[in-house]
Length: 207
Ligand code: PRP
Ligand code: URA
Image 1 (cartoon, rainbow, N blue to C red):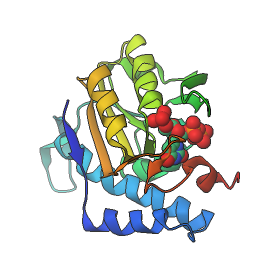
Image 2 (cartoon, helix red, strand yellow):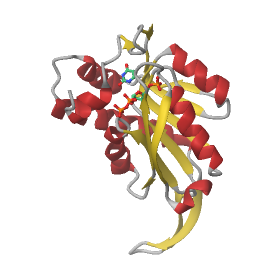
Image 3 (cartoon, rainbow, N blue to C red):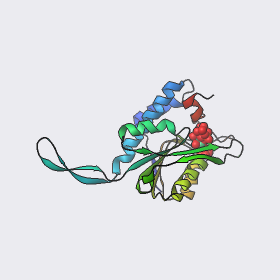
Image 4 (tube, rainbow, N blue to C red):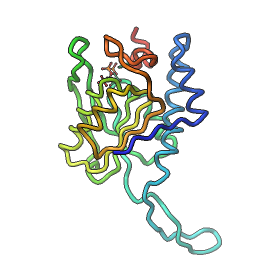
């Protein structure tokens, strides 16, 4: 597994905005979307291309387009905040959904929804979720995708804890992990420190 920290200055600037507890829902959502887009630009850098023959107004020529379909799989709810930022750069990307919530006492992930495009098994799958805390949700989502036959899976998160990275390294050593920030630790309630609080609630105004 490769672990990549995408700490571009613009990403760091926008992360500061979403970490700030004074940032309200609309700006919070917008910054999450923008960070996801900036990360997608970096992550797609080595995606395979294929040659295609086209005609410009001047002549026929060989050009390039993405060789594989891309499927974005947000882990509901918070992962939804990252989808449009990536689709703006890759408008042909399809979207699958995995519904998981963390049991607040055991911190174990509970599945409540799954829906995927038919072509997902041969696609590059980007599992997106802003928060990698214990890593339980991410590991469960990746297992669900592997059970459906996905072979090329990458995890994209905004803020991670060392515990979450270790979980993914142990359970899914074949999956590349991309984060915008690696924070210090988890607190006793399983929240990332310093983190940004409850991402789903801040994106959707549920608290
Ligand atoms: C949050 C977050 C991740 C999960 C991370 O979701 O969006 O999915 O917790 O924690 P873990 O690494 O310890 O599993 P939550 O369960 O709060 O659901 P929500 O997005 O619906 O608010
Ligand atoms: N989920 C969140 O939304 N935030 C955390 O810090 C940990 C899990």
